[in-house]
Image (cartoon, rainbow, N blue to C red; front, top):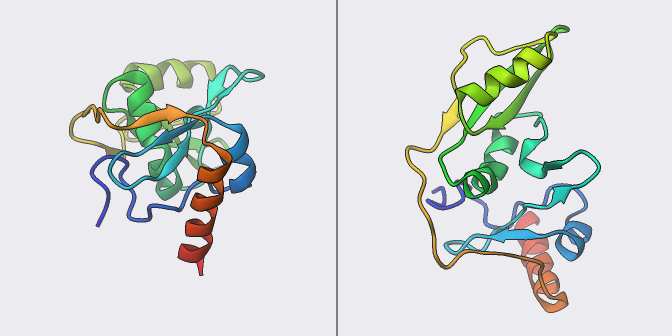
Length: 151
């Protein structure tokens, strides 16, 4: 069953890439329902947060959707973007207008449906969630739990 707060059925699936490094060095959104940590770090080089990047699949994009919702304080949507060469990716936007702005600047990309392929029904605040860096002990415990759930 998916967590109603962070939309995942696996409470230790994230971070996907270099998990220990991400947990140590990046700011995390900590789900108050299942305890999953989701990278919400801002990339100063690109001026973006992790959820702004393109994702290879809808399933991966869903893992980062909650951080977009929290950042934008609204239910955001995941859109299927198709490059001129036919490659699909998934990007999160706060609304259809943000998608249109992106497409107007990237003429080699399109979104056939012009609608999100996934969006939460409504944005909910979860007062017990946290946005912060983890302590060394929290990283150790989370990684132990992640490694156990990966087995």
